Length: 109
Image (cartoon, rainbow, N blue to C red; front, side):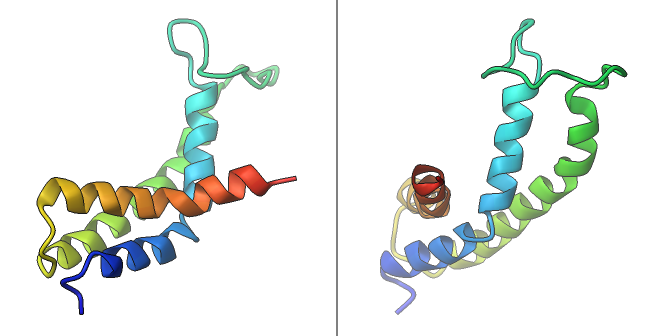
């Protein structure tokens, strides 16, 4: 059963549900990180201390890293049991991971 394409898709859809929080944290970091003087989106005004995104990286970084490592370990074990090619498998896995975040962002009030 794990040789089919829908098994990794289902596993990554399930992993994508709790991954909504690290994905939003990653978006927050990317949108507020200075990139040639500008963030990717409108920056949140910093406090009077001017610590910028470094404090957010201190708090969000470990959770984002833990989510990425967990996703990689699960998919590394599952990739050996499928008949999919490596690029096809990882593209399917990444798509399955991002679907819950995309749904949550589009239906958010």
